[in-house]
Amino acid sequence: MRSPELATRLADYAALVRRHSSRLDLVSDRDLDRFEERHVADSLRALRLVDAAPDGVAADVGSGAGLPGIPLAIARPERRWRLFEPRRRRAAFLEEAVRALGLDCEVVVARAEDAATDARFARAHALVVARALAPPGDALRLVRPLTQAGGIAAVFVGVGAEPPPEAEESSDGLAILRPTGPD
Image (cartoon, rainbow, N blue to C red; front, side):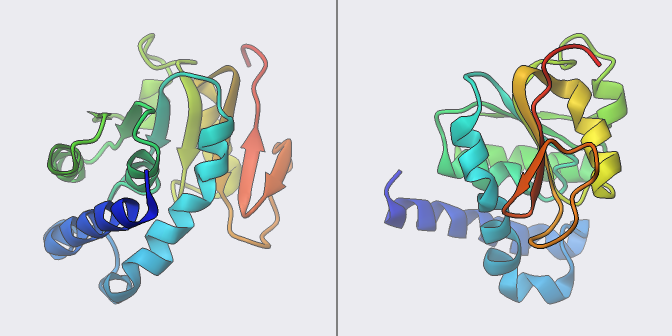
């Protein structure tokens, strides 16, 4: 996707978040003025992982306002996404955003723990990302069971932050695991 088109689509997404945020508590009111800088740009740090992941469905666990999944789906529309969100009102917002933005995303109303026990989702994703789901070590343990062997599980830890000890690598504020088989 060309840069001007990408910028327009990301701005359309930001407008949706701003329109619904106060009613659904999507992001902090003080973050709305800097949503693109604070949340969208941060989410796009995972683009290199989207590009490095094997073919297959990607997942955003604890998607909330659609972060990081929706910005990543906008930037790489050729990859199908699943957005896992246990809160029904936020999942309804995600459905609306997916429809309005024409994204190839499936919204799943489920907690990570429950999705990991469902044969449709367990070890079914080439890439699984989570941002602000739980403390990094806990988040990594939650996303790993959803990641296929040879896939990539990644959680945002913050640039310069200490990655959890179970992370195999860390760069750009992301802690990364590459599962090779069943836990």
